[in-house]
Length: 219
Image 1 (cartoon, one colour):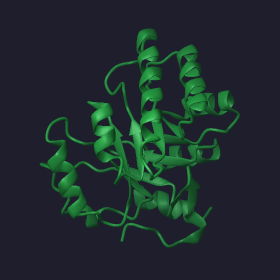
Image 2 (tube, helix red, strand yellow):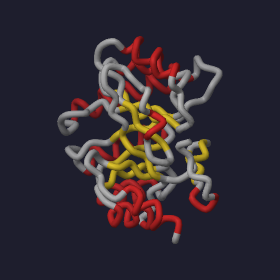
Image 3 (cartoon, one colour):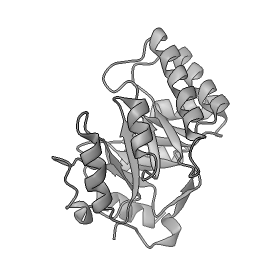
Image 4 (cartoon, one colour):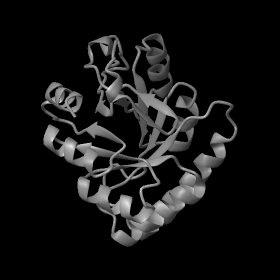
């Protein structure tokens, strides 16, 4: 029910076929997912597990799987939650710095975390793509360090908060690393796609989703 049937909007990224390149955050309350079927026809939904009661959250989600590709954003208790959501998430987004800019010490911690997650993924038969969510607060040097590790460790891509960081990532990686770009409106979304974004993630408060899908169909 979530999927757009328009073939020209299909996008393949990290081995997954998205019905269209647009994703939206889905905010659920009290671990309830009964309204998933009301979501717009988007390419994927980004879910954020609660800091507490992760197991009930997963159980309820499995009972309401819907038909959308699910990106699960991990920002707390990352190693444990990674293991718990791995088998049902279509895409995992690691967000080790959900509040503040990454400083130099945290970059080293993030590199260590990514290496541990990639090693942990080898324990599973099913392959789930893993992306790193980058922060507004990083310097160009820190960005390059993280991108080098992403490519070296075999991470599948990154999520960037702006079109300017998208350009920096594309330049550093020579366009070899898939990038999900966060956008605020349809015009910014089209600009990000033209600049090389693989997928789009609507920021909270995004307006004009249907307008954006219609604009994409005309491209």
